Length: 572
Image 1 (tube, rainbow, N blue to C red):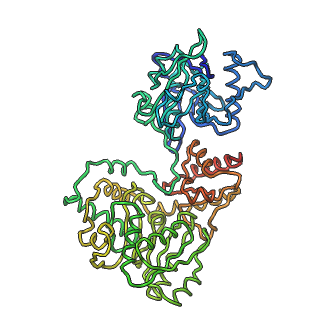
Image 2: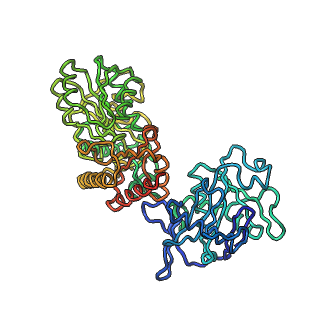
């Protein structure tokens, strides 16, 4: 093991690594897993250090390396050597069971340790880049003759890219420059250190990563595929391989007869699922679908009413205002259900021309009562509009009596984002009073395709709709959602929605004040669980969300809850 000037040292690597290890990534994990082929060989996991025992092992391995093998520091009675930058380091580690077999520290805080050796360090760094320093690279003796280093650094580089770094500096021993070059590093500046122990400052940049390391990082290597954390997001969702294959079919003109046939069959599947009688599929997001509905509302001469008890109810208010659709707003605290008696009183006092609300309010995990509101509106002749973006595909729904409803391809329908859907049940009158792209009557008059469309996105959506057993899916989501809420409450977590109003498929959790939702989500991702926490409304309230739109299993959800409990118990 050879040290550098900053405590970085490198293993002895065989020129042709023995074929002893194969790299595989189990579904739903954000760690690399190296499995030995020999009988009884243990598994090696590469991950970000998060647990107390892992940090204790880091300090012990640091002590072993730099007091015994390399006498840079005197031994300590505790057998620990804590790095002076420990509080600023993120450690990527490789572990086998409870044994630490490799580690490296990633640090983005200046001054770097290399600043002390090269006062003009900035002159050697790419202008405008976000640079980190890699330190304390250590591999246990028994793993220096395999290919662990390449796999390990591949994981580290992926981590750096995910954190927004596009360059990294490291000090490499002059004995291993060829190895470092193979891994994408380039030397810069003068040598540092003393005779017999000289080190070369080296830099790796995103654009200059070697072909070998790039394959390790982007998942194209046969033996190192890009690990995917378990998708617990409300979008984008995990898609089936059949859907993925449909997306990459050769593109087809939207003016061909075959595309028209595929487009019509996709609409038919949507109508069968939702109970609506008409549908328009727009090339855009759910925001576009709601903008198209708002444009239709702006054509009416009557005043409307919007009900809001969360972020997406407030967005409906914004949609209407931007379109010039006048309305009143009834608001409830986020996470509380609508007061249906108050709504009934408001409708009976002065019936609006239309009412718009969010069915499954994603932000708070509340299911608003579509059937009850439909009955109230029907009684007084109010046109009912529904944001059903999170409910279509998550639960049984009947939209046969609504005026308009919005949905999307990239959530619970199990396809890729990029298609906004408007469902309705009446004939649309031609108009020139709204922008062409928002004019649903123009779509209807041109058989749904007045402009360029995407055969790839439509094909993926059609495949997702056709392959799904919806009754089975709805039952599984409802059961797992209820069990998830029980498990979370059993661990002491506060769920934003009351159980009586809880929506299937989305659980919003109010974290304790001592934790920071963004950091909790980041640590969960490092352990293989991708949760929603980065939207402004979530960050500002210290909330996180678990979505079941990608249909995680009961076992995966229990493991995610256990990881969440452990991380929050450690008071992030």
